[in-house]
Length: 115
Image 1 (cartoon, rainbow, N blue to C red):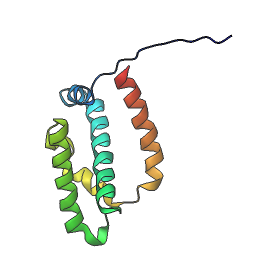
Image 2 (image 1 turned 60 degrees about the vertical axis):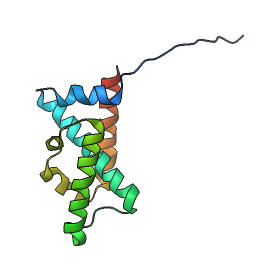
Image 3 (image 1 turned 180 degrees about the vertical axis):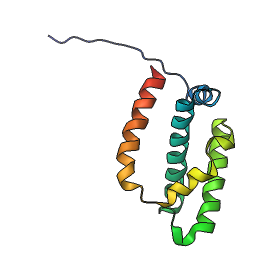
Image 4 (image 1 turned 120 degrees about the vertical axis):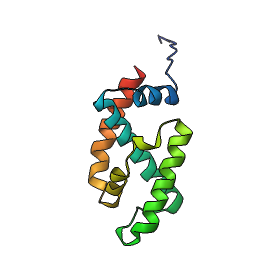
């Protein structure tokens, strides 16, 4: 015999969740939003240019990261200063070892935000 179960799960929109983070006075929530935005900006950079930001091409890559950040923040309805220029500098380092850790933390936060 086979048991069938149907369940409907409703999740809030990404924009609503981000606005909740953005309007919060809680420093931990803002840090989580910064990490999320930084990873999205670097991911978009990789998708569009097919490479990581290079220190040898810092002026051009940095301006491109700022442009991508502004576009992402506008699209998500978040203030541009949520992701500071100083954090964009972090994307010029080696991200591979950090990606697994940040990915795990980010997935935990997404699950918390959805529940």
